Length: 330
Image (cartoon, rainbow, N blue to C red; front, side, top):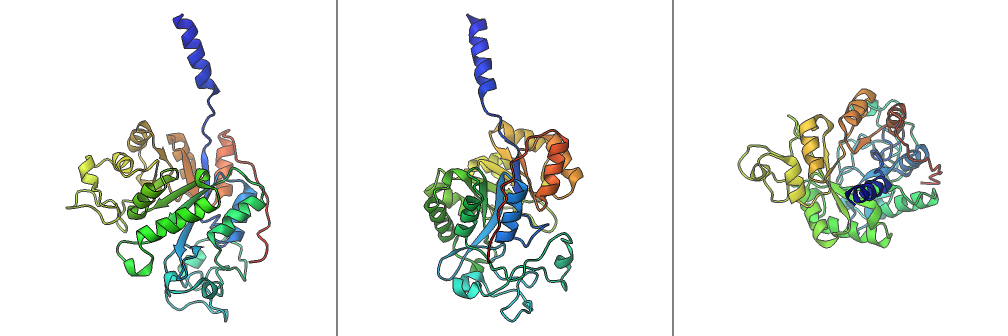
């Protein structure tokens, strides 16, 4: 009898679908096309990704607009006269959608160091910042009914004047996801866990991914410092024995997305034992992709989904099917 039960259990386990490695195109495919634009998302879909990673802000008239920073940046933004901005600003929150659509984000500024960072990026002049709804529509146009959307709320507890409140941003994003019927295929992520904790309260059906980084230039965790970090939504890492996976779980996260240099065999094993997925960002070198895959991460966020596909193929991993699509007029 025991042998029969064992055989049945084993068969059921083998019948369970193996969770696919999550190949995420960062800002669409930032290394290949203008970031956070329909051409970048079309490039990623055409290559074949599991997930489109993107960022959102709220406009003055509460449209959910795709863009990385709460303010317009001179590194990627041209005015209607074709000249690049001279300095950061204005804030997206300060302008209505119609005004923001007049800016061109289809080319890197060659006068900035950032503009030389992605030599493979192909410009698409005349490209405007898209609405989140337009990204959803592009995936539908591609006929892709499985691609996921990893959507980051862009705000900072250190610069509250630049964006909508964490609650307003989370509520607008949740409403847009639900309107599209994509709660089951969407994840909300952020460094600012205030917006995530609010999203978890109002939309428990949507997965949350907790972004984190510990580095000399940017540290959202503030390990060993008095009181909670302002990035963690009222939680204090030190109250969890310094365990980031335990902190993520307490905050309601299903996914931990650490800076790739912060991933270790130990914290990866701990996170997965707690039932968390670990999907580091932003990994662009094939050697590091290979190392992290061998370590056992559940996915990788990359500016170069083409490189990540090649590494996965070399390791005999299954790849998401391409879904070629033309982004159309911007």
